Image 1 (cartoon, helix red, strand yellow):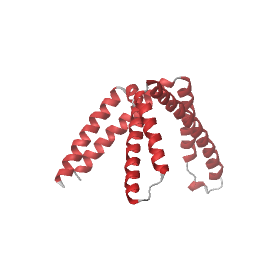
Image 2 (image 1 turned 90 degrees about the vertical axis):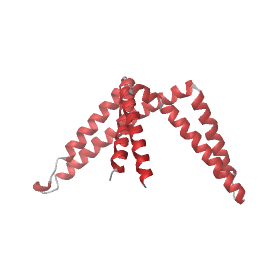
Image 3 (image 1 turned 90 degrees about the horizontal axis):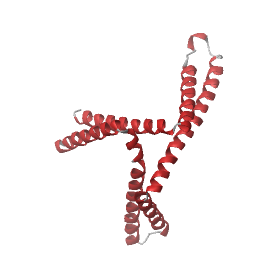
Length: 180
């Protein structure tokens, strides 16, 4: 039990250091997303090959698991060793994020209008202003998404910064949870 606490503190400290590194260079953090996806695909492929091997030994293997593993393995190597593919993934992610922000922002604006219309049917004392908060968040998301399409570097830095913040806070949470 004590060894797990020590390991948690060590891993937490490493996450805090990694988070601080990400916060100091959010653009570089963003560009490593393609590597993370490539390694995840590689690990997934290896896991699927192991699963296929275990199922083959039991006589219940299907070729689809092996085919999926081979495809994942090929794509992982392409992503890990092709600068063009890494750039394509990085560019795609930023524009997907910008598009997501615009769509979700519009949906929040629509939801705010519906909430506002519904709240008029409620008694005066139970009416809140959550519709206004939802409206403001929706408008800010649409604006942020449009800025992301016009100036992708702003969104790239934001995504990198948020990743660093998440990693840092995960490290702090891991450290504090080991003392409780």
